[in-house]
Image (cartoon, rainbow, N blue to C red; front, side, top):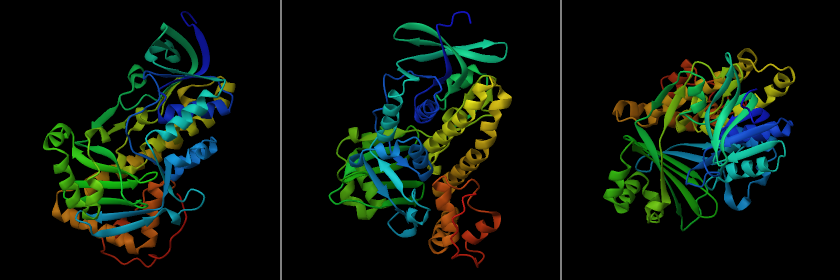
Length: 425
């Protein structure tokens, strides 16, 4: 192959949540892998980290879950949904899920990712290269046979039997494959903060109001994550109004945590997370595949974006040993990965958009229906479990059928309300 300086089985562009998991999963199967990332190292910035049960299952399968440092994690079972102002609407208990993943795990920023990367670095058949950018694809006709790079040692060319784009919503690999994408940027993002509490917070709270969403999630020790939805482009204006003004807004939404909010004293305790959605007509091509946000970014309302990238990685990794042994990484062969994953992802994207509409509404009638649904869930174990198992990543289909929606809105009784079944499909 002219110009190629090295050869590997799989070349992965992006060492994020999906790319690093894929590299580790392939290493466990003895598949030679090169992972490129343009960043200089693993992420260090502030971001909220919640491992849902399906993500925990992935990390457990890879032998990483138990290596997460106890001093950097917190198991959380109960999540309370409240109306802005403090009134509780509904409580959900992860303890209702089947063991052993009957909890959510909140970690300090990037703890899980660093553990995955550390495990990858111990694998002899994986080369992890930070500070190296993807610059283009190498092709033979319509088949991808490798990629070109720019790194510390200059320009490079890597031959690969499969190239995987795990490089985010604005994927350069997807662009090079000429796969069209519908990229939708939501008009809101999240201001994230981490503060210290005087007293340990052991349960999570989620407040919804008139175009207001504020979440509180306990982390290790007395630390608490705060997630506050704000209009895109409004961060500078919020900062100009000052921390005291923000604290007053938060205290009006969640009065019982007013003292906690006073522990936000510096903007360095915060970060901003934009939100977007990506839809593509295909995730595979001859010799190439997309995973995670490159294929299907989704609004964080679904609580599954990073988890779905991890499940993508495991599904693709399970397919590849046979594909590589048979010398067939064609789109037709790789399509089995997409067929297995797309229905679940599509459902979650749709669900997240529905949640954005209802939870962030400024319409009083829609808000009334939203609160009524939450209150129905609080007394209906069957529907509550269906919502919980969906959020946990254990349910493949939408949580509500048409008749369930009518019941949830309070217009029909539910004779099965007390029947909480542990069914995940």
